Amino acid sequence: MAGDAAQAAVRGGWRGWSRRRWQRALRLGCLPVAVLGGLLVTGLANAATAAPPPPWAYYDPRSHLIRGHLAVSAGTLAVLQMLATWLMGLLAAVQAGRAVPGQAVRLGPRLKVVRRQLRNAVWAVVALRLMLLAVALLGGVLVFTRWLGQPVTVEGATRIQRAFEARPVLMLLPAGLVAAQLLAGPFLRLRTSAALGTLGAALAGQAERRAWAAAATRLGAGLALALALIWGAAGSVLLLIVSYDPFYSARYAGLPTMYPLLPDYISRVLTASLVVGALAGINLLGQIALPPLYAWLAGRVLRQRGRGARSPV
Amino acid sequence: MASAPHISRLRPGWARPEHPVYRLEQRRRVASGALRALQHGCLPSLLAAAGLAAVAAIVLAAPQQIMWSLESSMSGTLSTVLVLMVLIQLVGGAASNILMVAQASPLISGEVELQSWGLLRSTTLTVREIVLAKYAATLAHLGSALIGLTALRLASATTALLWLAYTLLRGTFYFDRAGWLRMIERRLWVGPVIAGVICLAWYVTQPAVQHLLNGALGMLASSFAPSRARAVAAALAARLAGWAGSIVVNGGLIFGLSFLILANWAEPQYAPIRAFRTLPPPSDLEVSLVVSGTVAVYVLAVFATQVGLMLLALRLAQRRARRLGG
Image (cartoon, rainbow over all chains, first blue to last red; front, side):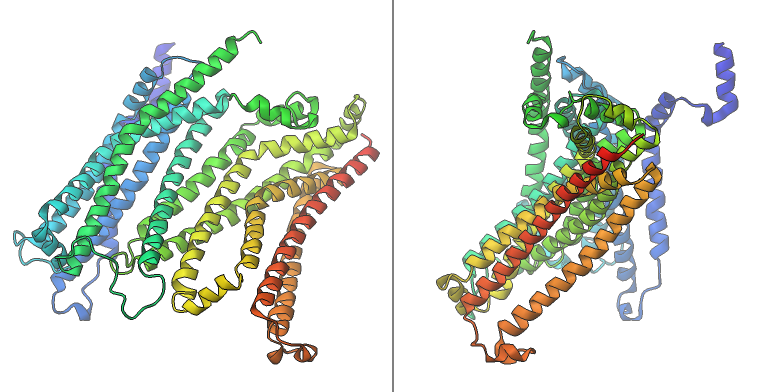
């Protein structure tokens, strides 16, 4: 019997694979697919957008070409890693939702299994992010050093260089936080998504609704975060500019700067760097601190339901 | 969930899972995988579309001019999010309306076609209970779409308010301090604020109103058509006619009222209709109150019409269902 099944599987090829085998193949294959797919899509995007430099770029055609290729590569990889991160988070939430039992048990081991199942998917996202980081580092080398020939001219590069020379720590610290978010982010997102999925599934109750509820909770949390960022930034900026500059005045000198001793353009770069660093830091802290809270809430809901089920009333 | 029994107790008897017709309709839907996916998949789909749109707005719109003009960057991001969310709502709302009509229209006609309506009537349940229990089960089936659309309406309403604040404070009144002071001192803001709150409430409650109205329309078509196919076709045709009719009627009314009030009554010296030229020009406060009052009354009238049509459709469906055999 077993021999017949094996022969049928060999004869049928991949069409004879079971669902479980497909899932396993996908789990194992996502890392090479991400690396090869990332390289292929980036190469295709560069090939599709390759064009000779226009006449107005006659003064520095090399810089024009390199700028274009760097922008296309970074943009393509940024979109790919964003989609991969989003998909990985959704998968983690759905799998965690499916793993939630009807009544109270220890959720920790189940979440560990889900995280282990998606380990390759996380490494696939990390690989895409490493490729993006490599493009950014290559850009930095091409723009700020002479290691690969004459430096490439980019608008704003001088301002960043001056800001770095004026306050190196204030530029390096946020850059480090962003790099940490870039590399550790997928692991933290997996934890957060799995915990959110567990909470959603625990709240849903009925077994057939758990996976959908987990997905809805993960997606709802993503939407809420994006909207909180947009509304928070827009509201704070509006309050700031209305309190300093409510009506047009010829004497208005602009918003107070954080670094009054430095030139305005350097101050702006440093402020932007600090804001980006603060956002990355808050995001990292949230991703570290919130998953245990979500898992605890899910466990509490399940324990309450278990008590309700055992109650004679 | 712990609160579910409390919520269930607030519902009328025919809208509870204990009701036999309600339970029957729910079981029919649970048996189909496609209907189950439809039931649970609407909310994640809407949230996914809105979340990706919000991230796209942050990535594409926010960095523009952020270093040199914070207010332009923020205002641009808000308007991009608003446009994307309204588009998602339009598409999602239209799809949800069509699904609601298509789900409700076979409810009675299907029973008649399968010759089980007579059997259902032979029970101790009244026609009103049977019709309303079927209606409630259909409404509950697409409840996740309703939750998603209402959440999107709330999000887009908040975004619109922030964008409006930018437009007023950094556009309209930034160069007109006297206009701002006049607005505060003469209380010109009272009328627009009341009208704005009414419009906002109408905007946020529209998914629920449309949900109920489309279900009632489907029930009406279901009670008049002799087969499921005809009922679905008739209900969808009625829904499309309703959309076209409401666009024409509302467009005409809004244009006519704007022409009469803004172009003639508010500025009688330049009025295209001669009869208005003899009138004295109204004060700023009068213009503010009349325009705001007209907007508020118009929106309330639209709401009352929608609720009235829904109740009428349900009443007619019950009346027709009493005469049905089969």
